[in-house]
Length: 182
Image (cartoon, rainbow, N blue to C red):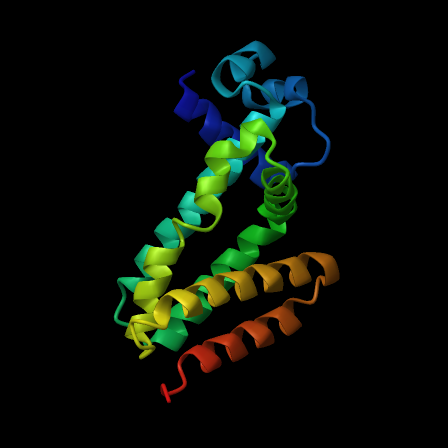
């Protein structure tokens, strides 16, 4: 199996089974390969998990691009994106936050992941802010704030399980970002 195929299988495995404390051997067995092939392609269990997070993050950025390409009003685009991201977070969120903490600790296998956690999200979010009427000079700060607030809401959702509360707060965030600029 190619690296890409193994990664796709691993993403599917975690979507179906969650992350838990699965060993590299059990993951390999579940996806029809050997732990040695996973080590060869990803270096370690942690390296595989980091690549899974990078892949899911890319899928979410692709989803954002697809949603932004619609003719829906910005508030509806935001709601649609939030709904899909919060569903995904219920599966991948614990892994995302765990590996984000590892990246903050500069663990070597997270180096590629670090670049994907913030900076690659900012350009499309800046564009979205500008489309929402935020002045271009303020849009980068709004984009960063929106990313941080959304991740905080995902953290809240994972800890409390309060989907309705997180949805309500996300809708409020959207309203705040779409108020006329003063």
